[in-house]
Length: 502
Image 1 (cartoon, rainbow, N blue to C red):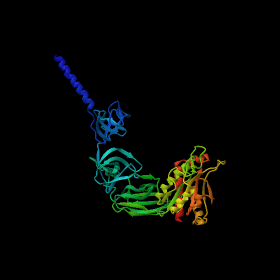
Image 2 (cartoon, helix red, strand yellow):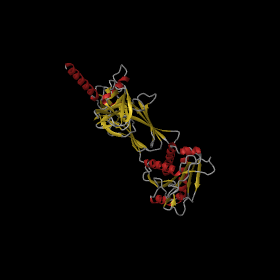
Image 3 (cartoon, one colour):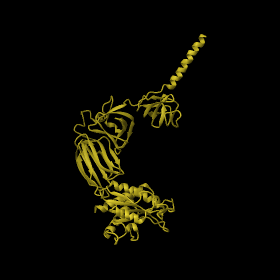
Image 4 (cartoon, rainbow, N blue to C red):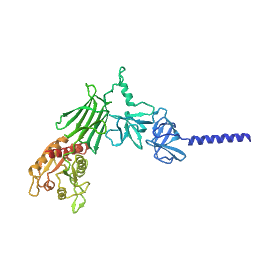
């Protein structure tokens, strides 16, 4: 009997051990690095043993805790990057960073951004001394060593070099001290540090560039021409300055094509800022008011207030009636069955956004696949009292598959319109030449088409632009690419800029 009692006690202890091993989950904080302690650990899309399996962790594999714990099915669940796992099979990684929190260490403010990029949205501006929680490892980029943090309830990215980790000296100061010769106390005394470059974008337009420095900057300005003499580079040489690393950012915006910031080769304590423009824009440079640094401010577009009507050619289903008229798909590619109406709409919608970014008011004759009467398209332009009308099309031939290139159709003024014939021709000539050059295709010249309603009826300079041949195999493939469409849109916008600047 005594033996049975003792056996029973050991059995109960054994069961208690099982229960403890099953339900004794790990205890982690958000941002902790943990590693898998099981041979294989399932990742679920929800914190439940019944949820879908979306992946697996192998023994020793490291993860970052994003949220949790959540108690479900007798376990504590933690969210990692790819889903949810049971905390029981995770253990705190002894190799993880010992610093879970840090303090902002800047002279002005530190930008918390939505993505690890100086072009991304600014979520907030963090004051010096703000305590942040470290959520992820560093993310390297061309310009900064970024780190993901939770700052006052907002999660985003900051430049790691402007953080002072708990129990650690300022990384910025340590970095500078590494450069200090043994016989000097500080190489940076009296030196202005270029700390950050910030942009103020509006969709794909940049209106301001701010160069943040640690003290008042002494600079020289240069304007350098490029191979394309219409474009310029703004060059600022900041004397008595230094920068850690190099900033080298490309843009797909307006009017900035690229910005480069780094030490000037062969010159001591000179930081050069080079802003490459894709438009000949007026600008001025001011000192920042609320912090140290410079601001490059691009002046408001002269195009502000001008209205452009963008007309995507054709539209509608060839087998469907629209107010008694059959729809019109336009040309159809014999190679891919691509329809002109669809390409024209795609390019026109892109053109609308670029023109709006440059300060134009834009009116569309259609924004979806529908049939619009030719006279109605002209009526839309006249009712808008537009300054120019641009109809977007793609070309075709029946027998000459070798035909390629760009054409622009126009109509001289007649009794029905109030447009000066010289204006019509000048407008068409500028638009044709700028487009052909911009997409690097054959310039087929201008066609005088007084019978075409959309270039005859509008009371403003009007063109119908053929952006390439769908019946030429090589050109058809080209015009379907995003790169070609983007270059065409930019060239058309450039042509409008050029015309209105005369």
